[in-house]
Image (cartoon, rainbow, N blue to C red; front, side, top):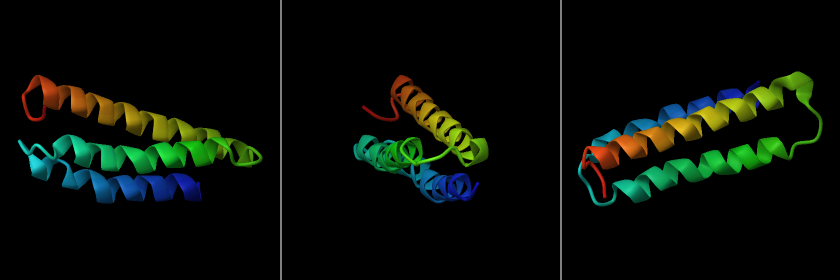
Length: 84
């Protein structure tokens, strides 16, 4: 549970910075800088010993959902010419 809370806190801190860069050629790099910590967290959670009562699996699922949302955001931005 603590891991999931930390991940959600990181998302709340990092995600608001992405929309403020609308139209910027730097946008793809900024999106990647948000994606990388999530990928690392996903790897770390997957390789933790023990199941922690199913909470690690739940945390991994939350991270997967966050990564899917970032993919959707990137897709939308490309379709609307917000990023290259």
